[in-house]
Each structure stands twice: as C-alpha cells, then as structure tokens.
Length: 264
Image (cartoon, rainbow, N blue to C red):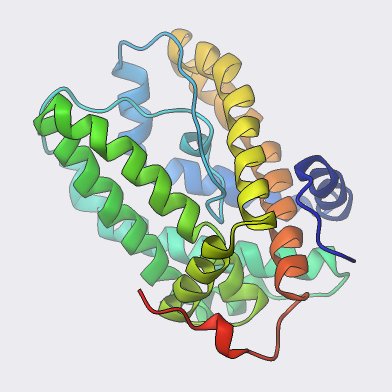
C-alpha cells in the first residue's frame, strides 16, 4: 500500500488487524505497572488536569497518554533502585510485543518469548537511552524552572527524531544505533514522517485531557481506569505506527540504500 500520513487511516487499519489478538493487550498493561514510582507520583501529585503532547513510543503505557508530575526538587525515591530491573523488563516486553504485533497484522505466528530474546539487546539500548534522556531532563527541570522551560521542547525534539527507532528494530531487523540513524534520516526528510508525528501529537493531546481528569482526581480508582483505558489505545496507536513505518520504508526495507546512513 502507498504511504499516507493519515493517522485515522492507520488507526482503523491497525485496530482491525490487531484487536483480535488478546495477548497483545497484556503488554501495555504490564509495561505500565513496571514503573511503580510513576504511578505513585500520579497518585500523590497535586495536578487536577493536563494535556500530554507525545510521540509514538514503541510500547504505549499510561504515561504515554498522561503526564507524570515532576518532583518539586531533586529527590531519589527508594523505588529508583528497581530501575535497571524495570528497564530490562521493559525492553523484553517491547521486543516481544512489537514482534508479535507485526506478525499478527500480517497473519503470521511468532513466539513473543523467542522474539524478546532475539531483539532484547537493541531494544534495551533504546529503552535505556530514552530513560537516561528523560532522567537528565527531569533532573535539570527540577533543579530550576528555567532549565525546565528548555527541557520540555528538547525532549519533544528528541522524541520526534527517534520515534520510529523501536519499530525499525522489528521492521528492518536493525540494531539500536542503526535504527536511531535510520529514524534520524527519516525525520530530517520531514514529509509524511513529520505529518504523521504532528497528527499523533494532536491525538495524544485530545485523549490526555479527559483521561488526566479521571486519573488525577479519583485516586487508585482513577489509576485503574487509566490503565484499562490506555491499554486498547496503546494497541491501536502502536499498530497504526507499525503500519505507517512499514509503508514509509517499503514494508520491510530489505535493501538499505546509502541515504539510510546519516551522520550526526
């Protein structure tokens, strides 16, 4: 199919192909539960509503659609020591999930455990890099309001440049650095890549406001509702992005051209 930037078209196609595989719905739910400290901050935060502007993340979670409150100062939660375990589990879940998601949409069978093992290393590299960038920006923002003003747009720029990377690990069987370079090259070209990203920003913003009202203001019930609501949203959005990336690179892109390699 020819590439198009229409998010609604890809959402319909992705949901139609992926929604019958009930196992897929377990992955976003488990991934949301991995980062307990994020859920804790939502529970104890003073926010009453917010709007989230986000790009595709590979494996959608609650915090992909709802802003997690930033600490008022630089603090270290006891739960932070579990971060390496959570990152490893996140990478394994993302690798298994995206592999099964793509296979399901093309009527193929894949063992998510085997896929998680085969693609764990590149996916862990992407997950760890994302965590490190977010952590540095959060620490910078918590250290001063001026740094926070710079941190937010910088985070959005980085998320835009590399949102295709986890999908490219699966679609084109690339390593972490290779996938980042490929995504960066696509981002520099703009066009459909930019248009899809802009529509995704609007999609997350539209979803996040009503969802944040429920999650922030109804305690543990709101968290549960948020987890249940974002699970199908994540599957639909991730399936849509997978199909878009496939179309953008030629449904697999077995042949790599010189233009794939863009130096930073």
